[in-house]
Image (cartoon, rainbow, N blue to C red; front, side, top):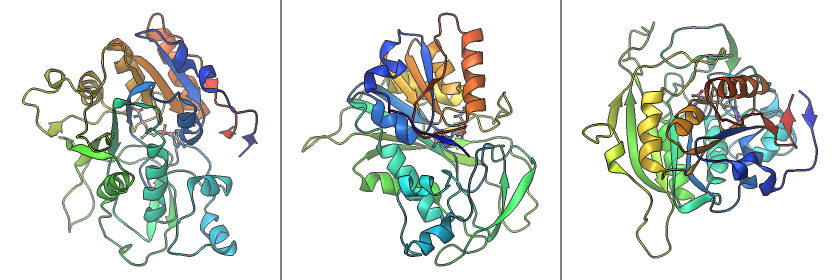
Length: 333
Ligand SMILES: C[S@@+](CC[C@H](N)C(=O)[O-])C[C@H]1O[C@@H](n2cnc3c(N)ncnc32)[C@H](O)[C@@H]1O
């Protein structure tokens, strides 16, 4: 892994500031570096699907000795290093040795959306759950429920509630971590997947849902107030939606189905509003947001995904300015 270290961008250098309605731009780099660059109060909606725990690397590099380094440097087993330390020591988001580290890091990263969001803004997070296994399979790519792809095995230390066969409740733990950081949770939408691949286990049901959490900002001594257009959601306005899982393009199969993301963007951002996806993958959010006449900014750490998104957007959407802009420091090449 190579780190390039250069001058961080100023907020006015991020492409989001120059977008017209219906236009998208892409920043190549870590969400941890990108979110603080966004101007305070400039973003209407952050909507994203971050890497899930212990499932895949997206072909990005991760150093499995990070736990040993933590302990060698005097870190304690029950404590979590912050994301900056973890990354500097070779860690990749989603590949944390302990699920507790993952929840903390994800909450730390998503909390960086608080400043850039307008007081009436929303944060929507899609996350799925995982079973604990001392020996787990890591894939380079692939979404839960979409069948098998090539995998490697890694050993994860058990202890406490980290026990073989345990459903980890990671979505609930993340939601609580964000509530503890001051966010107000408005909905836990269940994304029900009508078709999931058969599983070899004979002692449990198949996981066939994920969560979509809707968070808004707290207002001192007042009830939260935020943009919401109930006419733009699915018929019946219920918190369970059934949408099939789809393989994404560009070798990336953990994609947001457009039918899932469209009602969220349409209902939670005003016309021409700025929508940001800090883990943008194949760019489904950018595509839907621009179709809805919003301005859209994606952030993606993988240069190959970022390049593919930029090409797709430029080819398929007239008037789009989608050349990836490197965030500068800490780009993994
Ligand atoms: C679950 S996928 C997102 C899928 C996306 N919603 C779509 O529809 O294609 C998560 C993405 O986050 C990227 N990623 C991982 N760590 C990142 C980080 N620290 N900052 C930004 N992107 C990251 C991965 O390369 C992957 O493309």
